[in-house]
Length: 279
Image (tube, rainbow, N blue to C red; front, side, top):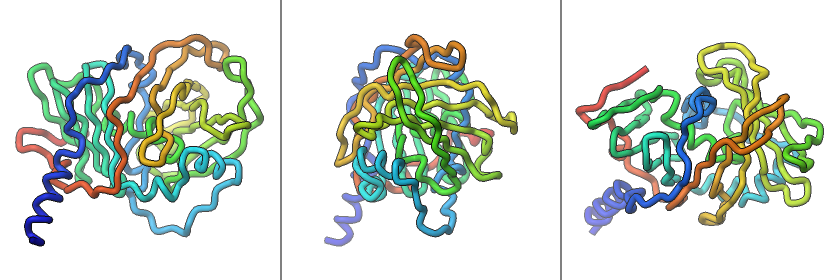
């Protein structure tokens, strides 16, 4: 009986995100600003840094609470979603405790197995930087919880008007040496009445190793409840004029989202024999 239970557990983990791919996102990721942002697994809790329980500013803690709470987020062991990327439909699977990842599409698959990022090409292959992309959309999608990871620092910003409405915010920066892009900076803007996240501003420093003042903006346009968590339903990228968002540029919808306590087997993320590690 124990052996049967073990086999069933592995099978369930292998198929945790294998739903029919019918994501109906309207727009693709064609903008190079999205493609310029590096988010790597070494900047997340995958580093397993030994540190004391993190204390968050009260307003930021209120944001986490408005989205279901950090305690509920930390119970989850996997996150899966489908979206339409620049190369078509994609299925993203993430092991939350160690941040192993896998992205599957008809033309390629990308994964991170803790040893490195691998790429499996199919007929058309992949255009872009797999190392940059392997957890980019997860990082955007897991807001605001992702900024609770080790190595992050917070500073309140002045109330800011974005697209005609005032928001409170926190600037997020990283300790030196955290990940490949420790100079990346973010500003999380939230509604002062509901405490729900509303905007994310971010800078691009991929391999530049220096701070940037070129801010880009994503509006967290719609939310959906997933296993006690409030997670994005749609993200909207905006054009920027005079340092502020002005006019919609593109959007991405997220479908078939699941977040559960199921621990995915390492084989889900293992590099296929035909795949190659990339840098």
